[in-house]
Image (cartoon, rainbow, N blue to C red):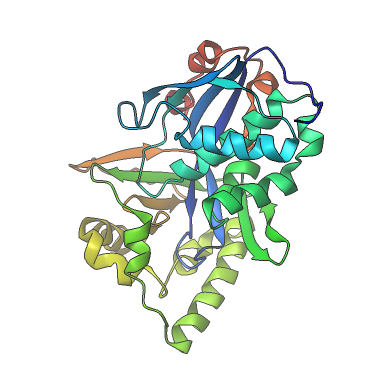
Length: 317
């Protein structure tokens, strides 16, 4: 298609889980977490194969329909080079359909892998353009921005597409995830939202979202007040009663807890040496904030997915 050179050796991408909204920052704020999917891709003479291990194994498609492949194809179109075939191997750790950005991670992985397989791809499709493309595929930028850039991000869209700024969270903020067995669907969660909200609630959230940027950036003692929300969580509570009850219980203990993305997972932003008790039906994952965002394995010294798997970030987290 173009004259760009495709690399013959495989490349590996590591992409972080993300938590969006963070309470009041609906469709705008997001945080990258130290829980990763690793995806290896190589160009082949024809056909598409996708091997999935871990989360989603047995459920996700193993052909062109796989979201990583679809994102790669769109990125290759932008880069001006479309390989005849692709072989992918996925080691997934991000739970699917739990409000932890698994779809955004797949999209960002696809874009990063495509530009990694094209000579000069990172110059032709830089992070600014990659974010626009990822948002075009995903539909909103609050998860794709922290997945691509790492850290704590503020994302928005304008006539040019999606944009984001990245900030370093204050030291000592400890994200703790509570992941239930049941899945959730973003479309269902969005359908629970009313078409309009009271002006007072909108004003409340604007103030809390601004305070949250301040709290995350350097004043963690304000996180509890800063994570209050009136725009989306209470409307979704009826469809996720266990999630709503857990958020309420944690906040009753003074913990800054919110629904992660569209749910049903819960994110607690702990700042002290608080250790949650085991909860029946929930996986409790103490994590850190991922500062690097999406990156290629070559940057980490990997050559293949086997190397990636030796460094298990979940065990280390």
